Length: 255
Length: 339
Image 1 (cartoon, each protein chain N blue to C red):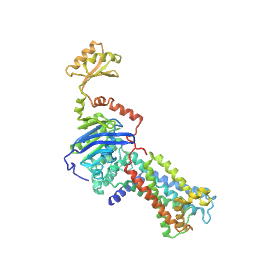
Image 2: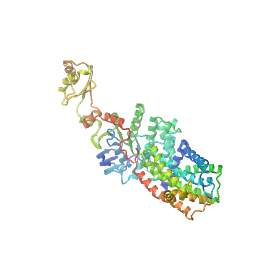
Image 3: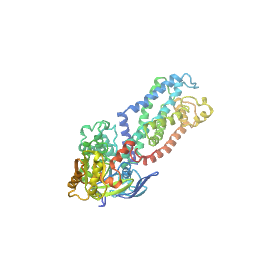
Image 4: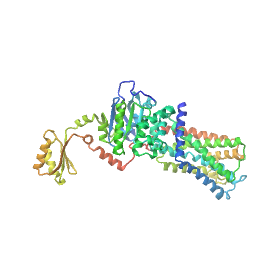
């Protein structure tokens, strides 16, 4: 266990140094969401009716959740690159804790996710977002975000080892996750959707997490168990995808 | 990190018996036996796709064998995999270094993942940087390194824990001649210090120069095994090569030289090759015969068989030709596990 913790930190450190040296990825994952915030706020904002909320207040939790789900892309791309370059072979031939390469990756994502959430939130505050919450609720919201982002990092860890190129990781991840974030309450009230989509949107974990964020940050009247539900969803995703990803790593091979 | 070089047992450093491994329908290894004594180099020689990399991957615990036993440094590669990883170093076909980390940072990371403290990992990294002539580049990201420097860094990373057994999978593929020579002398020095090395290569001169024993591998089987000299002896006598002034005289030259050998002469590109029965007087006899047949000769030479000849005789195809042809059509490594 101690070995796992040490090795995980060594790998996380390596990945963070890398982001610092080659910040293009980090930049892409920050600039793009800022662009989305501005587009949604000023292009769609006037046309979408969100009863009880200012559209900017409504949309910011949604876009932050969407953004954090995509934070795990860094893991998918990085693992895929490591596989290609033979680094995974090297790691697997070392006497290190088996899950550490993945755990270190996903842990590094938490740091980058925190950074990009900070950037987005600042952008939101500049264009008029305002909290209706206590400091504890704000921090609980940040905690939930990071947990949910961490869960998705494990999904992307598995994806990164399953596809053959970073480009494939990019398109598969985008195609799988992007619609999921849109068929949810992230940007529009689900009641405005056609019946089939509304049904899906209501059970979509993104809706649950976004609603939980609105409950925490805006005091939105959602069901009592929404925050708990969001936490359980996040833990369930980790419980399923972390073992799958580690199992995949154990028998993976460079290509 | 251990300082002990040799294993507790006095047995072979590498012992592989009846190794099988299949990927789907493809039988990558079909019963491979290998043995290397401590402090020697075992060369695994064969073209792309022969199974060399699969064998290395099993011996370094990256792949589980379907059947057979693999013992390295006295440890079983399946049962004692975790302990074995502390006693081996692996440098692969690609220089497996993190491009965004500096040379020093790469080595420190690997050292710490071997379980060393940050301080002793730093000390060891500095030693290796010095030894591999990377001092000036030590604090630059590895992406600024040349191909040869990357390979040196990769090899240094494999040596961080001073492992008693070192696996080098095609360590010089794609290197320029000077870097190749440098790498060869590093390997020779390591072996002189007592390290056991398993080296895969598709370059015959590399195996000839470095390996104490050579296992020739093709289609997942060891088709010959021994010292370079014994392999050469096994496939018979000296080669006589006549380079013709006029390639159109090839047929006459073949006819003239055929009686000197038990095998039909080979010919191509204006060169006629004959495995001669008798070394003594062979040159004189060849000159006489070619002269009688009216064939003009530009060059005539008698040479010991090379490992190329070994390969050609044993497998019916040249090692490098096939490897080259494969590389052109498919530049990916051999066993690609599909997603």
